[in-house]
Amino acid sequence: MKSIIITGGAGFIGSHVVRLFVNKYPDYKIINVDKLTYAGNLANLKDIENAPNYRFVKADICDFQTIYSLMQEEKVVGVIHLAAESHVDRSIKDPFSFAQTNVMGTLSLLQAAKLYWDSLPEKYEGKRFYHISTDEVYGALELNHPEGINSPQTQHKVYGDDFFRETNKYQPHSPYSAAKASSDHFVRAFHDTYGLPTIVTNCSNNYGPYQFPEKLIPLFINNIRHRKPLPVYGKGENVRDWLYVEDHARAIDLIFHKGKIADTYNIGGFNEWKNIDIVKVLIKVVDEALGRKENEDLDLITYVTDRAGHDLRYAIDATNLQKELGWSPSLQFEEGIRKTVQWYLNNQAWLDNITSGEYEKYYEEMYKNR
Ligand code: NAD
Ligand code: DAU
Image 1 (cartoon, rainbow, N blue to C red):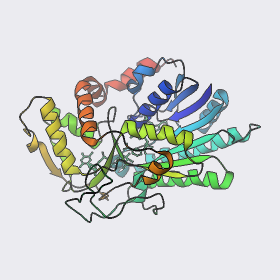
Image 2: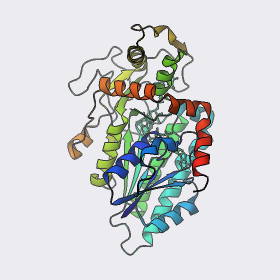
Image 3: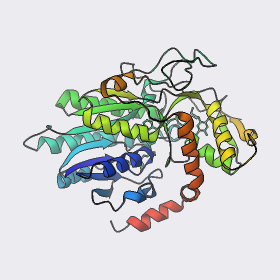
Image 4: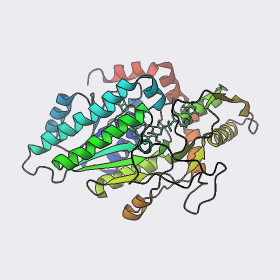
């Protein structure tokens, strides 16, 4: 069995990646390393927790000694690194924890992988260190077409003339994206300096089941259900490029196995939306699903003070990944958003556990003896 560490596997995207790998690759041992911060939730992985090729290890990626010992113990050949502090608003309040986990945590993993693989006779042969990053490192794009224009390549309109490409300059604006940018630089430095077999991908906004309800889509679905105000930052004009989380997990699988060492791939949905338009779609779909009158909840929209340093537009050009590895998003947004809304409406207990703090007790009880 090949042992692979997936960090942050109890979080939103990580749980989809762990599930995909555990189910698809019975000959891999998947070791989920997660500190279980407020964002980590083992309930996200209930369906595979007893799988014979799965192990959960509660650990902080910043704890170099624990990670290094685990790599030796499990003879790890690959790392897929997702663990991070991931919420921009939190980074504005507490930048230190973002630098600590996203930068120092990544460095600790890199150094552990390097030292362990250096000690083996075959060294880096057959090894991979895959770092999951974000499109936010590229900064913000212009919004040249405020009403959007049709584009043959995209599922939806585009709002500008420019896109994030792999060759774009790094220009992060938030403490979150600055910390992610710094971690990307460390990963590339470990390739360029030591030859560590690294890959980096930068993905756009994900949506789907198991996302922590501090992020726009799950937060607003839950608020619409409970008829709570929907705090739209600024004028709601900011544009994001949305990708269904399982499509991201599929891309990660493909790139982990077939991507070129030392390369960078941008992953995105070709699917730009203004926040305010997404909010209206969510209201429509939730109201429909709950049998409410059409658009009954539009008056929940509440414009609030903008996020500091709020990036205006993100839009990924994922052509490189499409051409080289044949990946493209499988799900149209309308279908993805309906699936997502239905999942949150069907899983109110999951949301309640998180929002009430109950889930913390749950995992402590379940995993205290591990
Ligand atoms: P998340 O916040 O839902 O999950 C993060 C996970 O990391 C949690 O399980 C948490 O417990 C764990 N973690 C945090 N600090 C840790 C530490 N010090 N040691 C071990 N584990 C720790 O995040 P997400 O939205 O699933 O994002 C996962 C990764 O993907 C991040 O690296 C993020 O930057 C990147 N990303 C996210 C998106 C998105 O739209 N959510 C898009 C592009 C890239
Ligand atoms: O682009 C990839 C990034 O997408 C990831 O790297 C981040 O980890 C992930 O959190 C996400 O960042 P955003 O800041 O774009 O996501 P968020 O869901 O926080 O916000 C989406 C947009 O909605 C953004 O323009 C801010 C706005 N917003 C968000 C919240 C939570 C609101 O208007 N109101 C809100 O209450």
